[in-house]
Length: 423
Image (cartoon, rainbow, N blue to C red):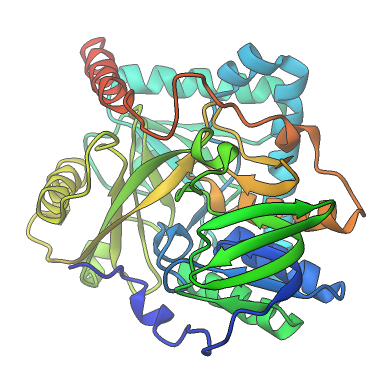
């Protein structure tokens, strides 16, 4: 069970064999959501754009993720206030709404068939301590924006999810689900149609600045010169590029998929997207074909292990959703997401190299915004908002080896256990 449930939708998504050109206006590293959005915009403006992807198209987070586009950012607004101030936090809330709206407009404008549905997003509390946290989250959000979050009673949640353990929830109606592979294919086709060249199995090993406004990038034995270079690798840090290597922490997401549920089983869970209110949550939803997706980032300090990860996810699924006991699991997969230290996305320029990185699990809507924004920055038509253009945080003690994830994992597990005890 190595392939994701989306693998069939990526089966025909391959780049024709091509020789690395000797020059371009812009070289983009990473053919995921960010890179392809940037490539489309730059190519349509008349630039010669070449996109390099180290593996097959869709092998990264863009092709294997959960498929949820939700309002907001990963950082708690309390933490944003502490680091950047209340005015900045208010700007984050305002931009988050704009980003989600722009994403939906992009899908319509590019006519991408990706099973996009406005499903809403419910974070469920499995104990009183978690419900208290959700109440606090709503108060914080309400103080910054009219986001329309709604607290749900236990009986109300049961209308959407028939599980006895749930004691309440928080509904965010402005949330969407989609097929991430079909969305990626739509972006790929739009970029290629615009004139961009996309190369797969073409890792960039080195970038050298050889003059004012001139770079030389190496791919195997080939060299390509360009006026601009954009790093869009997110969860796969670019060696030697400090904002990526020292500012991004790769955290694995683990997901399983069941076979199609029966009608009676599907009636127990609505078309909403669900998250648990744990510090490191479980998340689950139905696909268009009635498969149940169930995922987590619980093993943030562990290397992926197919047998262990699958067994742990099945156990978690059976605990949270007792009706799944005995339902066969057909797919199990994992992949890295890019987390920043302030848990905000960032656009910037370092040593003349542009970057758009760090979506922290919110990459579907934010990567579209940041990909287009970094393209506009290169074209000189608009600067990114202050929310995404603060310098990416690069702690002195972090050089690409996330030694702190193991104690952080213990802390998160202990925190959830203590919250459960305070009922």
